[in-house]
Image 1 (cartoon, rainbow, N blue to C red):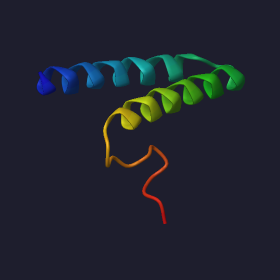
Image 2 (image 1 turned 60 degrees about the vertical axis):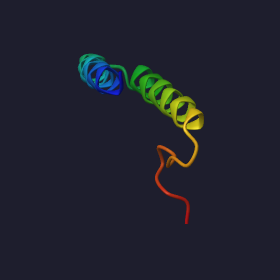
Image 3 (image 1 turned 90 degrees about the horizontal axis):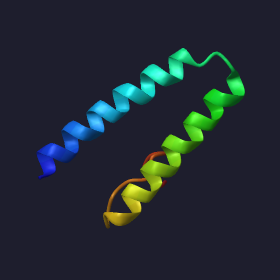
Length: 58
């Protein structure tokens, strides 16, 4: 199951990357970045002991 999650996340990441570079408007790119950060934060909050998307705390 974990391998399937990794594969799915890889595909979703590639699609998000494709959409990001297809969008020309900077404001919309910022919305895509914020959405991706929110998703990463929520996923990492579900896993105890994981590092935040911004990196390890100092």
